[in-house]
Length: 356
Image 1 (cartoon, helix red, strand yellow):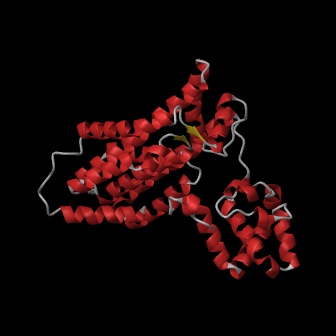
Image 2: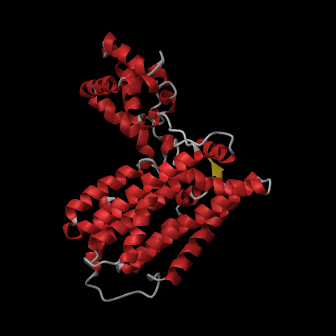
Image 3: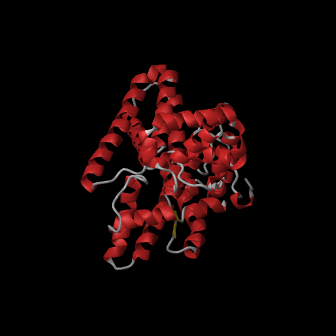
């Protein structure tokens, strides 16, 4: 995100010297609507191909919660689950759940195409060259990953859109003059709220940026404090209300420990002979499996998560942390490999071909 902000600033400075302003893809509602329609039309074949939409294991869990088959949990963002439930219940009302999934897919396509179109129009506001704006629009509309992701009922899709908006508006906040534009501040606050609510770890992104902006935006520190403060307090308050109203159960702590578990499991797989018996006993105290090395899969944590003892961790947090740190010192390379192997899909799109 920081790289994007620096890039925006660099391009903006390059174009400040130019008086030329294109009449195409301008920063106005007309071109925003046309860009959005253009993207949706080029995404339409994907909608027809994958009708009514694509679901994953995660989204199926959310659908079960929406239907009352499973109890609500915060394993996935509860706000996103409630959003899914709106469309699923509409499908249930006409006795056709596929209809509900299709409605959600259409909704998500509209949201993502709107965010992408806004991004292109924002480039016009910053006087980025027309050729770059056209190429960006074509990239959003024609790159298969964007079209395919718009069909998937998954929390990361809308969250990805929120991160893009958060990046753009954070740049706008930092670079605009020190004027009190309350409409902009309200909009920015809503985007911060969306970033927090649509993914569990969105709060870490927001808190980190909050600290950075408090330090760097000294003339606007009050606006930063109020904007982020309202967003954070509102999200925590809303979650408390929703949790009590729907009797939402807390998800297991192991969901937050995927990477540490994977790192320990990778050490077992490739360095078991170097481990002492005490270290092996400590590992088995938390990971309840005799074949940890065989279970370890570099690209997904589920195999290890399934045998992780959350209760043992909650009762012995200090011991787990000491174990993790001890193995980190001895095998830092394996820890790095475990981290990047588990996340390489974010850096390399052809994930099925990469061996780990």
